[in-house]
Amino acid sequence: MTRLLRRFRALPIRSRLALLVAAAVAFAVAAVSVTCWFIVQGKLYEQLDKDLSRAAGKPQYTDVVDAVRDCTQTPQPTTSPFYRNNYLQVVVASGKYCVIGGSAGAVKVTQADKDLVESGDINEVRTRNGTTTDGAAVRVMTVRLSLGIAEGDNPPGNSALMIATPLKNTQSTLNELALILLLVSGIGVIGAGAAGLAVARTGLRPVDKLTEAVEHVARTEDLTVRIPVEDESEDEVARLSRSFNSMTSALASSRELQQQLIADAGHELRTPLTSLRTNIELLTRSEETGRPIPEADRKALLASVKAQMTELAALIGDLQELSRSEGQRGERVQVISLEDTVEAALRRARLRGPELTITADLQPWYVRAEPTALERAMVNILDNAVKFSPEGGTIEVALHEGVLTVRDHGPGIPADELPHVFDRFWRSPSARALPGSGLGLSIVARTVEQAGGQVTLSHAEGGGTVATVRLPGAATPPPEVP
Image (cartoon, rainbow, N blue to C red; front, side, top):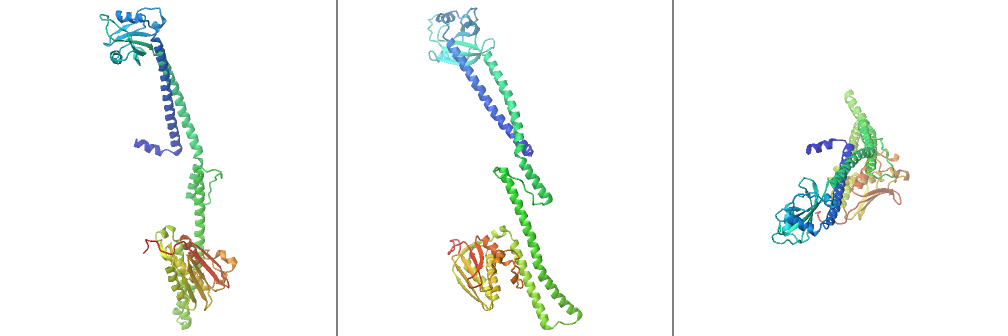
């Protein structure tokens, strides 16, 4: 059985479908055919039993008495067509039977007939299939007689009338019906198998196209392949095709973003690397030629190298943050205090802008997020405010009911640049000279969205920019948080 299952599973899907359809139809046809055959058999036997019941009343009382008294066990000649075509005899409890004159023959007596004679009720009727003494199949009806036989009669005691009719015609009819049902069933199964194969081929044609498309993508890495799908179709194959098209579209978009990220990262890395190379070559040439660089210039070069290395490290860190998958992030998500996170970011921002005045009005708020990523996002927002604030300016930070606002008093962002501020590596033309990689706000947007929130930048009344972060959470920690 296990081997057959393995062979069945090894077949192509269309072959399996055709076999399953043929098997299902074969089972259904077999069930219907067998049921039909038994129904017809029951109806024929019922008609025979009715005929026997009517025939049981035809023998005369004297015929029965004579049969019992004479007890003849061999058929006697007669001119009556009724007696020539049927079998009539009287049986007693011992099993001895007496053929009524003119009967077509004698019927074998069974134990059931004896029991009926011995203990059956008067006029009780039983029917069964039996055989004659010559071996012919007959339908037998046994009727318990109320016939009184005096002592000394031969044979004495209780008796029953057995009347039978041949089953030859009935069995012939049933055999012909069985042959017809068998032929029709065979034709139906073969037709069902052919229809199942045709339906399987038609139904699996879109799957074949999908398979060809997948093999083409695997072979050529061409993600522009699309499978045509009817807009009105909602079956499983259409859904699978739409899912495949969506998957290839997402992969193509991801590849484009990856290529764009690599190109942008290469472009951003080129500037600090070129500057580093130039400064290091100047220092190396000074050592090789023995002509020392003035101390002030040397310090400036070293400070520039240090700043460029810091910028490279920050850029690499930003790229690593953007390259992290959602699964890597989900393992470290926990309930944290947004108030404490903003406080930690404020301490770092005050170190980077000691000449600025940073005010904070923070209320408790707890969110589900990754602590390190959320703190980095808060630091990026505050760094952006510090970078664009004028010397001696003020930065106002507030956290109320899950809404964090950071307002600076810098030059602001032009309206045509606002839609691009969260794009990777995008930098305002007026800020190209300032340090930064153009990834800070992209990281902010991604982190806030992963935490289920929103972040926006807008103009502030009186000048400057307002960064607004909305995060879902609660003012009190859940019970499981200590």
